[in-house]
Length: 208
Image 1: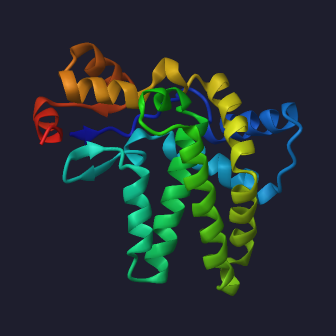
Image 2 (image 1 turned 180 degrees about the vertical axis):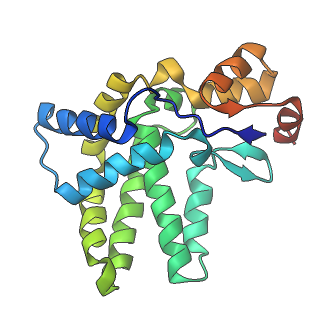
């Protein structure tokens, strides 16, 4: 499967759109957050606005790795840099899924509390790890705030998702699951509109 660079939001400056959306949501919900944390969350949304950055190639095909496997990557990391990358991936994916793609969790064996716990713990561990490095102290404070206010930021991103229409109306995970299980032409067409080019070969590979 090849993935295009098309973004889910077009015709506007994506970064400015998300910045305005996050700032408005924080104000509406009376949430205080440091400027660096807001900057991080905005960049996280921009990063995952390209769907190929949410999914990964695995032995099962092009899919979203379970949080348990992301956690295993962090635990089994052979270097500090690898551990930090794995923890950040775990925290970021947990926050994006639970905040923006909340609807997809209704069809999963785990609920949103699992994502909140995994994401919060990932950011907490990440904060501890980067604080050991003088160059990472600023980011350590960001990850600490994300850990302490993870469920709060989930609510903030819920509001951002409503505004950007990146919620259950365009549920990438549901469409991807429908396509891989049933090879649905309708799901394939919607995925292509979202920037994922699908093929029969990739469907076949993902089933093994």
